Amino acid sequence: MMEIYFDGKGTLVEWGLKLLDVKISLPDIKEKKIDIPGLDGELDLSASLTGDVQYHNRTVQYTFDTSGSPESWSALTGRIANFLHGMQRRVIHGFDPGYYYEGRLSVDSVKSSQYTSRLVITGDMHPYKYEVNDGSEDWEWDPFDLENGVIREYKDMLIIGSRVITVIGRRKRVIPSITCSAKMALFFNGITITLPAGTTKLYELQLGEGEHALTFVGNGTITISYRGGSL
Figure (tube, rainbow, N blue to C red):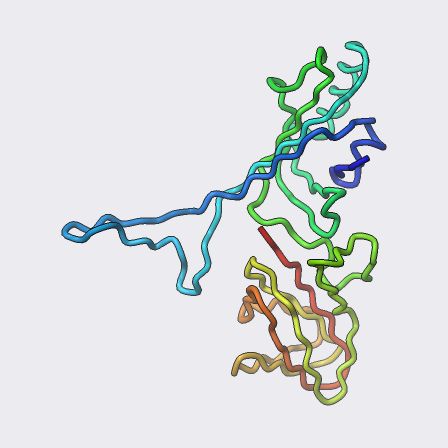
């Protein structure tokens, strides 16, 4: 039976809900167009100088079968509403366990019904789904997608002299953070960044989709925190 996890609570195990349907919309584009008099069409400024497009939130909707009496349905929906309705939660789908969605949830009272044993939960979610593993944590096989997943093992990597580390970026442009045990230098795309001991948020690096080769020079260990985002 398929599970949906709300901040770690499984819908089947925790509440006995049978998942009937999931609807995941793509986020609408934040369009910006200018109508210039005397010219055909419109000037589309939706993309930034880097070619990135910004998005509005996306909507998800879950329909469950509660299979209970009217009395038990009322008590069950009350417990679920107390935990979810109006709350900001992380949501993981059992069929896509390597990612989580994040946003504000609500129990849809209009679409839910005790007479049909239906419970509908909707979510106003961030436009991207995010990788569960950001590379700085211990890597596990359990949530890994063998077809589309990326193994991110960036924790306590040893640097002796120099070392090239390749980070595979997802669709969302991400600013990584790097933790060094000692002062080091980082070379990337023709720029040099001095990294002090400790954790540094690298605003100079905005890693988008594709492979990014980072060259570290120094002696010690580094940990890269990069959480990919995908549509």
